Amino acid sequence: MPLRRVFQNIFIAAAFLLASAGASAQVSYTISTRNGVSRIRESQLSDDIEFLSGERCAGRKTGTQGNFVAAAMISSRFSSLGMKPFGESFTLTFETSEGSSGRNIAGFFPGSGDGYVIVGASFDGLGVFDGTLYPGADCNASGVSAMLAIGEAIHYMNSLGRTFSRNIILVAFDARQLNLAGSGAFMKVLADGRLVNPVSGKTVLPRDVSLMVNLDQLGSVTVPFGSRPDYLIMLSAGTDGSSRSALLSANREDGTGLDIAFDYYGSKDFTRLFFTRICDQRAFLESGIRSVMFTSGITLNNNKSTDTLSTIDIPTLRKRVVLIYYWLSRYI
Image (cartoon, rainbow, N blue to C red):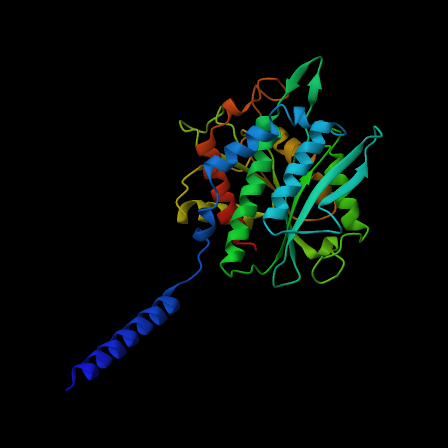
């Protein structure tokens, strides 16, 4: 056989093997929920908390320049995640009872179906009082950082071609310190039919929302369960056994291995207080929307100048965010 023909046969065989290998790899590749976990990073969680609790945000009190800086940062992150705004910008303004202008920051990930899941966290704080900065690192820059990290994971999954069945709304609530005015204002927009899906153009109504998830103070390890600081508290309605069983399943199957509690430090009164009265899921519960709150609980640093980044356990915070993401993936 001529040498030229030999080389041609070798080339054809090699091309066939490469094509077969490529086809095999393409067939065997699947997009897993675990792909999104790679985008939940300790460094980003730390950077977000450091910025939100730093001097530029000046405690994030509603109506102040520092609050505006925090809102702009969150809006910028939503934009970088490819989220769509409800209108011309991510900002939904409202008036507080004190006459100041509040800003909820809301962004939208489209899904393949008609249902909606809302993930929220309050971003305002106490600000500066008598020259003292109240940073609000754990309360609630930690919750905002967790929400943004979940957004990063969802965005990455979308970039891999994974479309979730439900539409996802991320919202940073303002004016939590003013009797939960921000979450109340957002719920009113929803109830009044003023929230419009930016892709389909359809009005989003309360009955379309299957779940609201509130992330409220997630960085503490000062009140461990048992002998470990690796814990997470989930508060939900007493009849919502499916949410609790799904969290236990995700914790067991996905390897986070956190200690889980379904009450607030074993107290029925505190559990009822934090779930139904003083946190941002209240307005949604009152409107009949199934709601869940995740937290690591209050600490001695709450509403004090000592609530700084140095009090946050970043590795444990990441474990909590990863578990919440795994749990949430069962609903979207």
